[in-house]
Amino acid sequence: MRHLLRTRTASQAAGLNTRRLALAIALPALLLAQPGRAQTAPPDPIVTPLSTQPLPDVPGKEVLMLKVTYPPGGADPVHRHDAHGFIYVLEGEIVMGVRGGKEVRLKPGQTFYEGPHDVHTVGRNASKTKPATFVVMLLKQQGVEPVLPAQ
Image 1 (cartoon, rainbow, N blue to C red):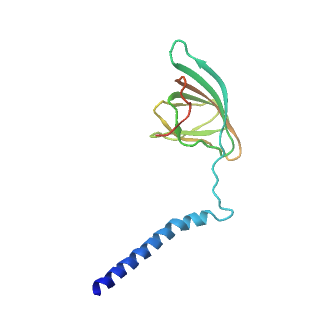
Image 2 (image 1 turned 90 degrees about the horizontal axis):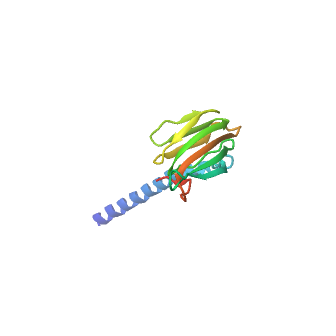
Image 3 (image 1 turned 90 degrees about the vertical axis):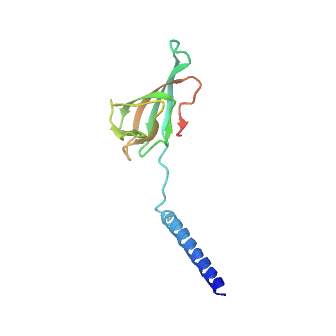
């Protein structure tokens, strides 16, 4: 009987700990879900293809040129390019960064480089009120998607 009593108490304690854990997980989510406190994803960038040029002197390679506009507060998800990426800022200010590197704030006329093994962890508009536009040139394999999921 005494053993049964201990088992029941341990079981009750486990149930109480489970309830506490569930509450600890759910409470922050409930607070964030309140009206007026909803978290929304940043606006997606607007990507405009400008040019694709095969490189006859470098078989299997091409240069893809894109114009990217981040709306105010806009950002990219974490991603990578199986390419050499060269960025040139035209308007506004952007923040860029790759895994293992520092975030860099770029203004018009400044550049940024991403290598084919870099994971692009930060790409966003530095402003919540003004758009930012930049040109991206990717030296990549023909037939390979320009944006790939991060690994």
